[in-house]
Image (cartoon, rainbow, N blue to C red; front, side, top):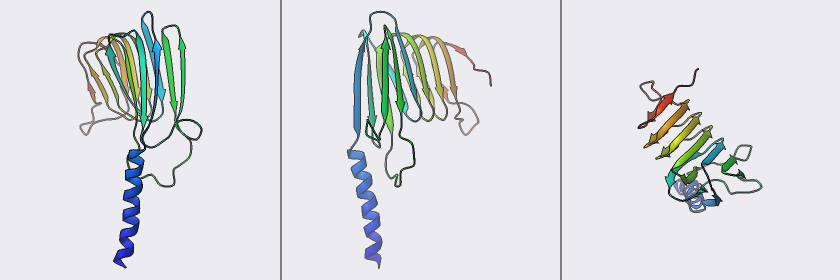
Length: 179
């Protein structure tokens, strides 16, 4: 009888490890000539933005749960001049078995100066070393803002155990959003 108990445990562990090994990726670069503007909108992913000295925006999305395309994550990208928009949408429905890591991370590299609008329904937002206008919204995730200079509008529905909204930052003018 005990031998039969180990079979489902082994099967679950095997599925979990297989899913972790099957992470899928999506990557695209957008050339910029002037001041970069970026908008990222997703329902359930982490958004990490770092800056560099290149005149382009590079987006890299990794998902350890979903594939990309029909039946998986849909990525809609659009560029008009120096403005880039990314919408990352997840499949509808409930997975029958959701074991293991199901993380999706959107990693962006963009010029050091620009304007960003980052919005995730459920995930942390990490923004580093940007100068300009920044608007960040997470329904249930931590906001980590470091080395920025400019106007920041930030809101997170998540609260720490002390009841405070988690926001780490440096030099900026913070504009609170009315409740």
